[in-house]
Image 1 (cartoon, one colour):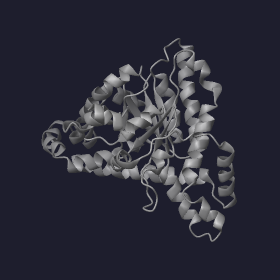
Image 2 (cartoon, rainbow, N blue to C red):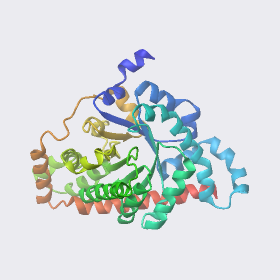
Image 3 (cartoon, rainbow, N blue to C red):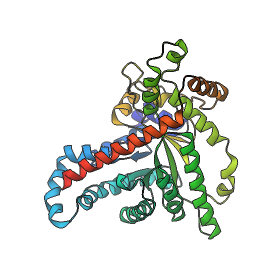
Length: 363
């Protein structure tokens, strides 16, 4: 084991100040000991899940299939059966990460579980679901995952005010990041006004990466301009670096930090490479930096373990060059806000469809 620890490429990323989380959860992952091995050998510091992940798990894991007949008799709705199937696994994953959560003073070791995608435009429904799931899972290191729609962002303030950890997901634009950050701080400010503790209330802003490049590259594809060709594959990480620069240089959180609050970290999501001609770990290698998180799917995790290079990327080292890239994209008619809103709508639809399919499995 000591030899594994010494040579783990993934653990080396942690040494540079970035947490690597796994973007997967299933009963087999837990029962096989694979998740425990990833924590011990590779220093994996957290885990995320979503409806598509659970659809795949329930469809292919025989342990879930064996439990379904009894649940169909005991519980009236497909959603109740789904939660009865998977919430114990969320709890087990939380328990595996609990030592890390304690050792890090509540800054690592989180497991994310998402509210129903059907609530993405329902403020009160999202708040109620977050409170219900927080109470049902009953682990201090669970994060309730909420999509960064206008309704989800409005719910964030209330959920943070309630003292619940939140992973804001499906973030594609700078305006979403700023709105999420403001709502997070409003929730903390209200707690301070009530003289309530703001310690150990964790939140991350999950910024989706590779989907932006897929969308932007498609817009650039038909241009014969050599400048457009040179911009392909650059939009997503450029936007991420600018977001990191803005986060790092924002002094507005200091008043909350004085009371022991944890900053809302940026989390890089959708970091599996979509283009077959691009390096399969480019969205991990290119976004390593202190106080960030990268949640990676199994294939990307395995690829980085095999040949990834762990090196500090100085995320905001050349912010002027990054802003110049953004200006070039704009000159080619690329509006990342418009692209991001389209990707948000597509992401919501994808998760809603996956949720509908997984509920059909439990019907």
